[in-house]
Length: 315
Ligand SMILES: Nc1ncnc2c1ncn2[C@@H]1O[C@H](COP(=O)(O)OP(=O)(O)OP(=O)(O)O)[C@@H](O)[C@H]1O
Ligand SMILES: [Mg+2]
Image (cartoon, rainbow, N blue to C red; front, side, top):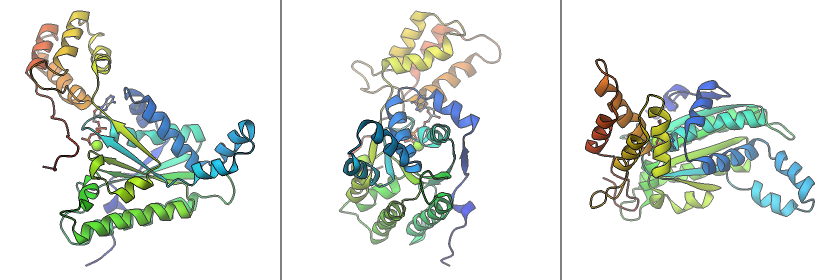
């Protein structure tokens, strides 16, 4: 009954970096430079703590106590924010930047809680414990006695809302609490053993995150919907080359933004790339070329994904 999940059951696909595909996907992300750089630094230090020591020798020779404070942070980063804003995309591709920067191989183990761990009692706890067991085992092989690790592992806990919601006071369920505890234990195991491993957690609901989990996060990166300039960038990069005029791009930027007297939110990045742009192409295909005025019309009639209002009860 209580058989431990196998590696294949736990993680849909392992991703190994460096690789061309994640490199290109990372480069395509817009407006996330700050998140990219913070995440790459945190992950880089977990792999190569000696890097920070080398920096300190140069600039701050007496920084031992300070460095210790930085290096002792638990290996957890939370990616939180609105739907379709690049959390999963960044989590699945940042390993490439770190692998290149540190010149080592990095493996991503992606665990999605939304599709797993529903149903049987104890399943969530077992999943989380097993995921950490594998992560610790893999990372232990990569740790080197001194200095830089030979490689690193990133455990991605995507769609972590299932876990995040779990301790909300009123409906706290014994089993859910056990899931959170297993998660916390896992983070602490990696930290105490100083393994070259990190945990990335993606959630729409930062407010529902367990305080004990949030306290451990070395950083909480927030993600939001694109503003006018970012929507312009996404749209212009794809529609200018096919001849849309500046005014038509302007009209598209306006049509995909918040509407005065209407909705107070605009399109998400994924609304633009996965819905609007394909709709514009398929509207013209196969018999006519894309027409700017028609593209604006399509944008005006399309309804963006409603925001995930953090703090409200989950649907
Ligand atoms: N910052 C961005 N720049 C460019 N494209 C983006 C960006 N964010 C998201 N996208 C596009 O939207 C798609 C969905 O993004 P992603 O899966 O990372 O969203 P998410 O934040 O994980 O959302 P959810 O909370 O619904 O899981 C991506 O594959 C990409 O095409
Ligand atoms: Mg996601």
